[in-house]
Length: 259
Image (cartoon, rainbow, N blue to C red; front, side, top):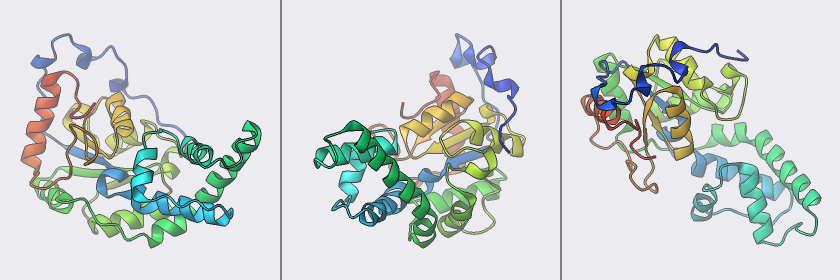
């Protein structure tokens, strides 16, 4: 699927732009949607390793530690992260054109390696995640996962982290026809559930992903121990808590637990 038709809830003229957000009463929670990074540390335990393999393939003495990679995640684009690292190490900095070429080559190599790295990754679910998803399944609340990765490795990774049969839909880059973050994956997940954004709650692994979810009309929560105001994990969180949280976010007017 190369594009997702616009849904009625996308336009700003609809009801959630009311100047009195406290009067908005959300419907009972019908779906929770996780971006892949909200399930586990996919960046640190997967993408970081793929970049390290790409650096080695280009015979560069660069190996990102977990701490270094976390700092670089403040930059929104992976090419910016690679360029910042090369500049900091004085690698290929004499010419911007040559630096860009090297950055592009490294990122291309990383993209070629990511499937194999992710399929071999040994990632643990964030604390409390499996219990929350089991609770959602029991309560009849639909569970979806969205990712900018390819289905070839995203689907096995979801099964590894969550288990079989608990996630009703997985939307990947293959489904929306693009490998860059956008709201299309959330829209497609909602369409497959037959759910409205006001009846759903998004959990994201970054503030950038949260902004995308908010742009689709969802209420959302960041799950990241390093983000101020975010949840560190899902420990002790249940679907009844998610329903209350959804109501609180809509009442607050910003729909975000960490903006």
